[in-house]
Length: 145
Image 1 (cartoon, one colour):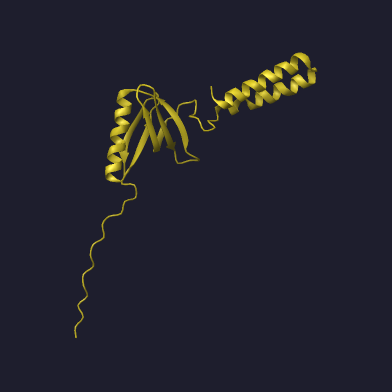
Image 2: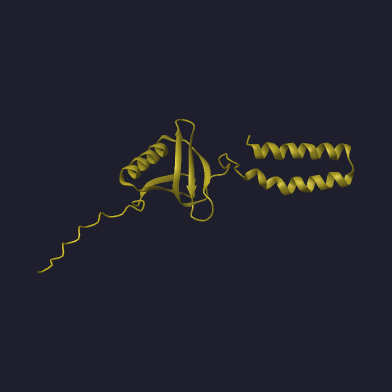
């Protein structure tokens, strides 16, 4: 259980205690606050998000593969701050990600991820990562004299 969910659950239990032993007004106030704070349990707070990434294209900023457990990825969707996700582990997905990371490292590119509607991610190497083309030598100026 993540710290956000634990904190929210503790607050709800405190609100329940006040509702049982306190006044109706206190119970109503704490119930309203608990309901307002419920969406805060979806914030990752340093832990992977508990939801899957929405369908779309992302740039993989970092990844860690824990064999037979999970795939942890830091994704940048281009709109807002990057998000940290825990993806389910499959051998095919792990191999796909590892091959894309190896190719990107060798070519100076980046790794992209496309999250499908069905929830299965696909990884591929993208671009050259801003690598510049080699500069050509300038011809020597011929100065007559």
